[in-house]
Length: 246
Image (tube, rainbow, N blue to C red; front, top):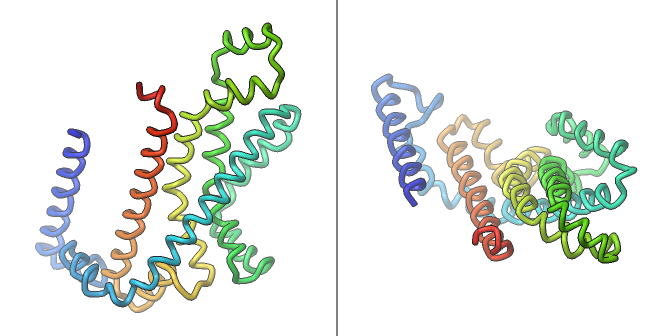
């Protein structure tokens, strides 16, 4: 609890300092609006952006779900068929070194302006932490327990189901926390590709109109969504991996 109080105090001090400096230095609102101006726009501009919130939320949930399925599936395949790891794992690493903003226009050319290219963008951004964390979890199980199960005649799939999969859950949730926060950013980038609704579209319109305060309003909502997703994943972790917290 003290951690969150300290963090809240730090944010309050940071915003107060931001407000004071903007006023003392007479910074133009087109360059950097004060926190008070952003808070005002957050409320007064709500009728303008309220219809953009739900499409972004749905896109985040769909993209995150697809990322989790793909990430878990890839980790399981590489673990159960280790002969594939030297060939596939480097490709997964390379996929994270190519800027998504460069690939995004190509996805539009290949798949059009529909939902699919947006989901692919979010998956490219989010799946890697899930895959890497889960693979690390599979390799970090108790070696003595694994030997005992082998001696007891357990099959490869029995070891996986009863030891490796449950034992890797803390690692999986660590990856999910990272992927969950990245998913909002991935959704915004995908909406930049071309979308009728969404916070990404709203940001572009506000930026072109030099309404910097509204750009910051979109950023605030992005942070809120990311924190909510992180909190939900952490709550599910406490429910699922009770023995870790005990």
